[in-house]
Length: 109
Image (spheres, rainbow, N blue to C red):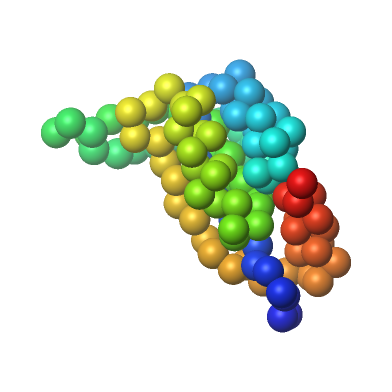
């Protein structure tokens, strides 16, 4: 579906539901995301500083206009407790025209 502007989704993990809610609320209040889904507890296994670690985290799925991704990232980094927060962008997602239009409307000031 063709859109004048595009929508992206971003995956970001946080250490707990309190941090998830704080970041999600700030992103939506500041119109840097139309919707942030908190997918609940996930277990992450990763290498950090030479050791294999395993932690329970909360997964965020951030839906936003592609042109707001860098501003959303800056906000998340300013609020995130990790030295290197996960930030994986899926640019220019496809979906129903009406839903993608809604995402774009919600991220306009």
